[in-house]
Image 1 (cartoon, rainbow, N blue to C red):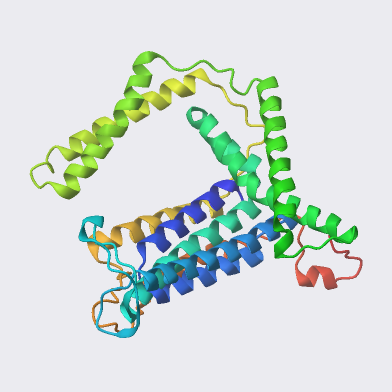
Image 2 (tube, rainbow, N blue to C red; image 1 turned 60 degrees about the vertical axis):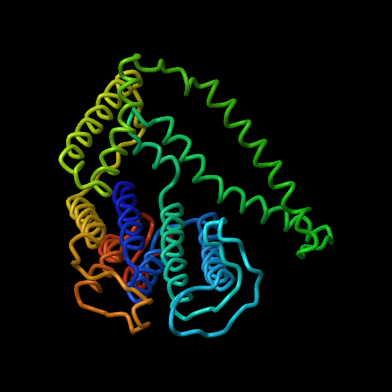
Amino acid sequence: MPAHAWLSWVLMVMAVALSTTNPLYLVVVLLCVLLVGLMAPRTGHAIAGLRAMLVLGAGLFLLSVTIAAVNGGFGEHVLFTIPGPRVPGWLGGLQLGGPVTGEGLVAAAVRGLAIFCVLVAFAVFNGAVSPHRVLRLAPAALFHAGLVVTVGLALLPSSIEDLRRIREMRALRGGRTGLRDLPALVVPAIIGGLERAMRLAEAMEARGFAASSPPGALARLAGLASVPLLLAAAWGWFYYEWARVLAPVAALLGVAALFAWARAAASRRHTTRLSCEQVTGLDHAAIGLSLVVGITAIGSRATGWPGLGYNPFAGLQLPPFALDGALLALATAWPALRLTAVPAPGTLHPETLSSPGATPP
């Protein structure tokens, strides 16, 4: 599956997960992401990265619930009370301890579940698409930003591989690998990561990755002006009624300034695509589906359709489960259908393996 399709899928999952406050739909999204992760092509580094992201997501989920319990909460269903000191009012309403309500715990669990879905989706994306393929997707104007993101995506699997290798070497030498010996495992991995980063920087500088000249002064000024124009447009549209007439004008000017900067920056650098991935008609349809689902999920808060919201503070009722919201959540599993219809290179169907003369890859 091409990298364009994987990128559209992970952005769609992020849009759906962060726009949904219904825990039932989030569970469906999480199950779909795990299904895609089981069927996606991956390597040993990807399996270790997925396992680490699962542990990190579960830790953040428990941390969100713990913080909600420590800070107390509002609601009618009080479960228990945590004693705590009285915090002065000038600290902005900070609360330590107090009544822990079911509404507060459910709201914290929903936030943690959404973050969990996003982390697992990015772990699947990182395992299915190599960093070099991600770098080739970046336009010429964003080449350096794409290079930084690519190095960041490759950092987690390489660090996990370093930790695993150091742990195996210590075990072969008879050393302990428990929690008390964690510094002896982490410090060599950090030193190895810094040395690898230095070698990468030296190799990139020797190959002229930063040899392109910057765009002109007018283009840089347009790029700087695009950010305040877009922020002013968003601020005026959402917070001031009288500024809603001027907000679209500021948004158009910001987009035009950003486009002018991107055009000038792209003309200064000519990137070379070593291999151009072919995108089939099925992949184009899948990318279009991701775009439609993502826009629908983001616009659901403004339009109210489909109903992806759930407010636990409104009596702590059971969250609704409608057909339209369920279909929107199930749409995040389309890579599983795509991989079933057209398997990844190097994979064989069970009937192929059972045929005489067939050998597994």
